Image (tube, rainbow, N blue to C red; front, side):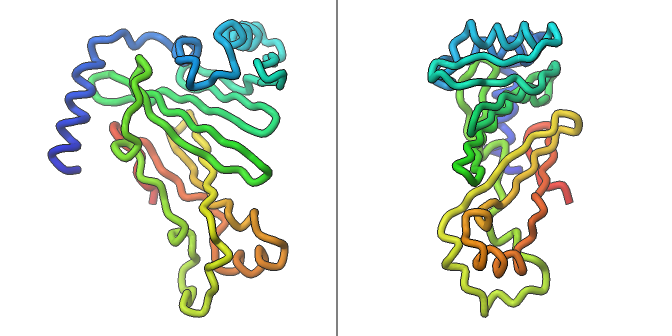
Length: 211
């Protein structure tokens, strides 16, 4: 970790350490700015939380007339699912008892592809590179594979899916591009690419690969 990044994170933690951190993820979910999830207004968010806490089926209609389900909610984690997309929100601990909000948004059309974002607890967006460096496609190539005779031109896009685990604060990154290929091409490429996700673990200020 270089000095510039260390100072930036320290400064960030010093600022937000003056805030109150007893609030759980539900509070931040309802306070989320509307432009981050415009299809789900604040009253529908509150309805989802109330239904879940009352052990009822937590399903509401969004503003696009689709159904949104609150699948899981703990003190630090919340996951939502709709017809073809999902959202995960997790509170990650930093130094000085401060926190950062991490969000994954996944769209399946039909192959799933994700984006990941980081925010302060008052919803100011942070640079992803300060907290997470995603794996690249070549890192999924199996060991002892001769890549010189392999045609990678069929992999003309990168589709990655992210899944958070609130129990051990890990992030799984799966390379989904092979699922986009036709059956024959998929069979060829699966011979050289690992289907296992690459796992990252949260370490105080950053997700790092869990070797």
